[in-house]
Length: 501
Image 1 (tube, rainbow, N blue to C red):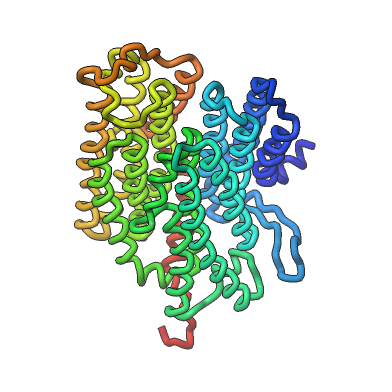
Image 2: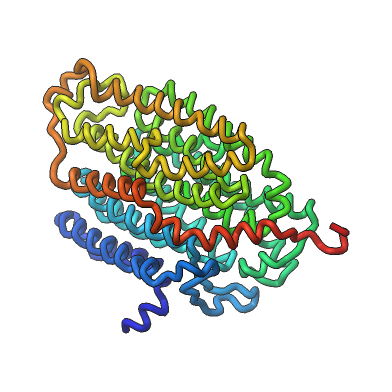
């Protein structure tokens, strides 16, 4: 049994939470919600433990795909169930399973309506997102990519705020329309290569004009998911209406699907187009970093402020991708993982306040540090990490990307580094108004500090933020070989020899 498990690590990582979610739905008893919660907690904990061997057994010196497995799925169309991961995918899989465990714990006493359905949505979504990070067949990837929209749609639509229907429809349409162009690109590549295998696409040579069209088709799907400016407008609405757990998964994991997919599909399949369009991609990234920071400055809703902050920070990710050097690429990967921890923590902090006061408006608070000192300590720490404070994970990724940008163009680095000023401005402005000064709401006077469950969650995330900030080497060691191999692939032209180039 143990040998079978080690040979099918990825299948276990994907299907264990999916089937666990189905079991939670099947055995749920509305009269015994605590039993449902414990079952969901056990399932998420086992699912997290099932992903740890992906790290412990990972060959750090190898840049190719590991833990590969598969079988013929639809032979008539050469579609396979083919899984495999590299140094880019494994950290994101671990982040996914870890975040799901945190979300299940965070919802323990908060979700009182349809508890089983809520827990099951996150378990199933966890498995589907791990499937996106693991799939090496284009159609399998597309199925996972689209399927994970369903539980997220339900989470926002059922447990969301008063405008949840508008937010869910907007979220669904943005993502679905972009994904249809990605499917067209996959079909074109299949007609040309006779395969849906991703590794076959890496070897296929295409003229530059075709590469540009393929890249733009992928861009339509992945830019929406990250999200990049100007297709970012669905994210603040989705965050505001989503329950706390939905916001945590949306920020910590769902946005990373877009970044990961650029590196897995768009850039290596169309490397010449990636270089050709890199100036536009860098411009869009810098606009996201600088302009969206200004937008965050004027927000009155804490969730909207953090949502815009996420867009700005994800601009660092795409900037790191398209400067085509090792520092930038590895820094972007570190930034994705770091943002997963920090954004999850910040949305959980907003959730703690919302559970007590039932308001996300900054003006509803003031002087929270006087009544909730332990909570304020955690919240201010995560706010500092969000601004890129040295010693926290928020500093490492951004600093690496800025160093990589300097090697390419000083002005890229200069504009990107402005986030250290603007990020501090909007984050500290929120911290000042919420946690310090006079108490603006009588409800704040009677606030109770963190309970044991909330303290545990925030303490674990604080440890992760500090650990990655002080000692990022375990992550960079894992990504180094994959980053070097990817950069080598991007440096090789895939233009047909007949073009004379």
